[in-house]
Structure formats: C-alpha cells, structure tokens
Length: 472
Image 1: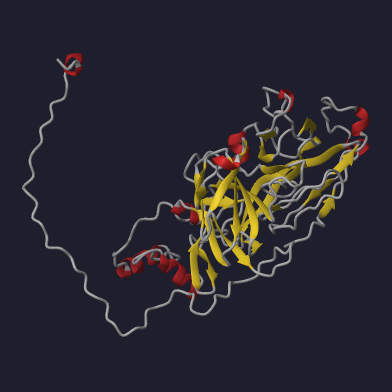
Image 2 (image 1 turned 30 degrees about the horizontal axis):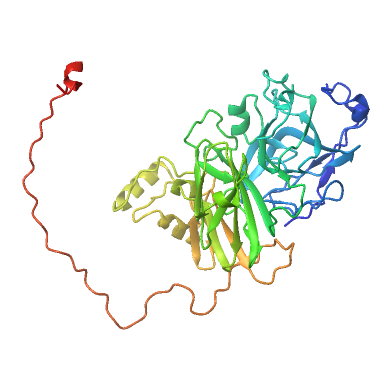
C-alpha cells in the first residue's frame, strides 16, 4: 500500500492562470487570491488512509485501489481542487485503458469531509468538451447541484468553476458529471464522497472501505471504451479495476468493518460476502436505524445507489467478496462465445488454424480449460486484453475476473496495517480434500420410472370482443 505522500504538481495561482475563466459564484475575490494546489496520483494502488491534520477530526476511509484528496483550510472553509482530464488507468496487470478521470485517476480521489463543514470545490476542465459535476445525494443550494444548462452554465474546456456548500448530513455519496454523461461516465468520470459524523464516536468502526462499481465496453485489442453501449459491457470493475487487479480488503480478526459501495454501472449488482453475515447500515438516503436492519450475506445495489454494510470479521481466512451475477466475475472476451460443451474440436481446430493462426479451442469440457491452459502456456490474446478468468491462489487457478476480491481476516495485524498478508495458512485438517477412505462410493438409488399418461390435446378458444369477458 502506498503512503499519502502523493505526487504534487501544477500549483496554480490566479496570476499564472490568466484566461482560466473562474466562475466567481458566491465566493469573494479575496478567497480566490490563490487556487488550491492540484494533487495527483497515477498509480492503481490502495493508498493508506488520509488522517486529517486540519479541521474537525474523523476516522478516515480506505479507498480500494484509490486515495483521498488532500485539502487546505481557508478561513474555516475546506478547499479542494479537482481536475477533469484524460487519464491512463491500469485495469489489471497486462491491460490499460484510456479513460477520463480526475487528478490522474479514474475514478477520481475520494472526498472526505465532516458533517457541518463548509466545502469549496474548485473544478478545472481539461477535457476536450464541456462538463460539470453533480454532487450525488447532497443537500445543497440548487445552483450548486451541477446539472449543466439547468442549474449552471457548463464548464468549458480550459475553464475553472467553483462550487460551495455545507456538508449537511453524514453518509456515503458520489460525484459525477451531468453533462454528456452517457459519454463522460462511460469514460470513467466519477468519484466517491464521504461525509463523516461530527461526533467521532457515532457508529465507530475499525476499518472503513469505499469503492465504486463501474463497467466498460473495450474491444479486445483496443484501449478506449465504446461510449454508446447500453448493456453489453465486457469489463465489470471496482474503481476501474478488474480481478486480479483489485486489491484485497485486509482486516484484523474481530475488527468491526464497514464497506461502502456505490453503483454507477447500467445494471444492479448483488454483492455477496463469504464467511460472515452483515447488516446494511447505510444508503445514499442516510443511515438505517438499528431497529430496521436485518442480517444478510448478499445485498443488491441498484443503479445510482450507495450501500454501506457492516459486520464483525470474526472468522479468519481469505473470504471471497464478489458480485453474484456470474458474468460479472469474468473479464473481456466472455461475450459472443459459442457453447462447445461435449463438442470434439480437434479436426475443426486444425482447419481453422490454417486460416486464423491464433485460434484456440474454447470449452470442450467447460471454461475451466482456459485456466488450466493458461497455467501451462502463454495463451494467444489480442494486445491489451485480459483473459476471461485469471488469477491464481495457493491451490491453483481461482477462475475469477471482474467484480471479485477477497476479505483477508488475520490475527495480530497492526491497527493501520493494510498490506496484503499473503495466502491464509489454514490450520491442519481444515482444508477440503479428496476422500481417501476405503469405502466405495455407493450407487445411485433411483425410484422406478413412472410411465406418464398420453398427452391430451388442449384446445383454447380466444375471446371475441368485450362480451367474452362479461361473465354472463
């Protein structure tokens, strides 16, 4: 995990940004004597939590494969600087995508504030088209809501706008454009926002994670998403990362853990945790009263929703955490592949290989063949493309991709230790294994086949006119 000593660049001052077109809004000219510096990070690592050194205290979150944006205090106002710009994001080792994001990454950095903070957001547009930012779920003045054309002029390329409002309620929120959002969100322009409780003792947890669900349609061999796709995405990601590029969530045994998840894809995602029960404690509408919660192991997150789940990590091990839609735990090349179960393909492969040298038979006995073959040889793939199922564990191929990671519960970790502890060392006798006893497997005992009576032809007469429905 990387430290919070991020790469700092492009310190803008108003005098050096002539022509930046800063929209003054309700902010005084004195407040704009110098813009906040632009802090950027281009790595895909999970950064250590950003502990506040100014402003109200809070317990920070950890952004999975991301980071939190530093701020400055200016006369009691917490000031941030976001830059919308083209970025290069590593989806997983072996694949990079040309996306749009904020401050060097997609999604952009997490914004962390405290209930009651007055927040000033400077937003600079380095995209090739106009944009805006909507602060999803926030209570704020209408003119700060970020819907271009409706509540504000669009932020034109090269311009800087400023938003200012009070973070009125604690919770988990998002930010994203409301300007050509079909293109801009499909290109990865989004980020998380967390407003912490003013009372630091409210709903305390030991580890607090946050990430966004997003999806891309990137043709094998290419780098840029197709922005007109409605449903047929081929890369399902958390914070623009696909397994095995998604970091594990590392916690101490008996930690109380909170995981905040926002969905900015085009479909719902049933998020499933192995080995533990959790409760949904928060939505984008607020925190759920204790009397309204119930235990779950899977919770569905619809489009545009946020969910916060909480549990006590009291079972050590490497526990799967994933979307339960099976095609969402599979990477690119998973679509439009014919089912070839039980089909002998030897002769067919020889013929096709004469025409397509890189052709490879797929799935005579199932898609696990792909994982086995990948372990034995280099599989021919188009440039910049991930295999459908990838990643290995201590017992072989994991056969997962996309929206999948692990919750790693360990004893003896330091309070702020988030480093990957490696594979779990199972106590002796606690790993499922092949049966080695002397008893033979019993035969299947099936009841005798019952001969079904001959089928009876059923004739249906369709109603003719309204009189047929009268009941008379």
